[in-house]
Image 1 (cartoon, rainbow, N blue to C red):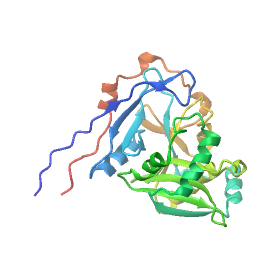
Image 2 (image 1 turned 180 degrees about the vertical axis):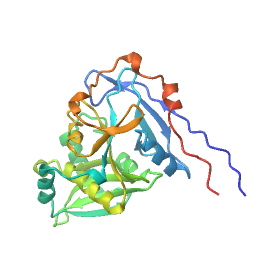
Image 3 (image 1 turned 120 degrees about the horizontal axis):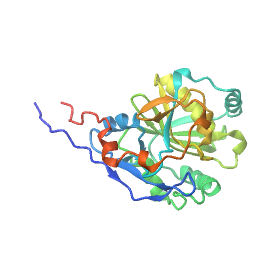
Image 4 (image 1 turned 60 degrees about the vertical axis):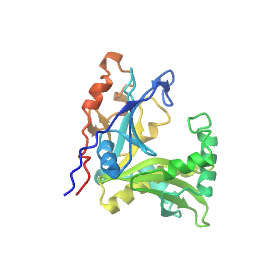
Length: 271
């Protein structure tokens, strides 16, 4: 019989920097390393508590005077596409979906660069080179797939790096052909992941953060059966206009209290 002491999960806080979503705000993240044999357990547990994965790190916004970022997910069983969604599905019916291992290709990077240059030229990823792109795709200690979408002529038009959780699919990062705005490829990727999750018997599709007041994140509120992680629980989004991105700084809990409220899995190695 093997006896192993529990591994203590350590949490850290980033230095404040410019917020990518709301003008005039400062962003700070609470994060922990994701590594070792128990990475799957930790990713599953913390994803249910509003965390997101970036390579071998799990993070959650923990700003000193703001709590606008809310993790969002779609309840697959309750999802029915709206009329605009059905039009998007019909428009992209000719695309093929290919699920690959988490391995970067030149075609993916070329599409990624075109997407960034057109949509996020001033963003934090704007200077990412091919090696950093490969690290984003390949440095994953959990079950991840690269979902590609191609035209009938095999042209790559959209890509999504997707984690497979024990209760859903998590869209880590997606990008698409910026010249095909009329096809709403970003929305199509989400709709197709709902289909994938339903086929796999998974109850949720995790979309990342929804930020009230951010035009970049506004599209997430337009999906039916959407819910957000707020006040330490998942709840239906309801009316998006009822949310405010203004929080009194005294209402933000100290970091130590935030960490104490995180539920961690049993990190002892399985016998």
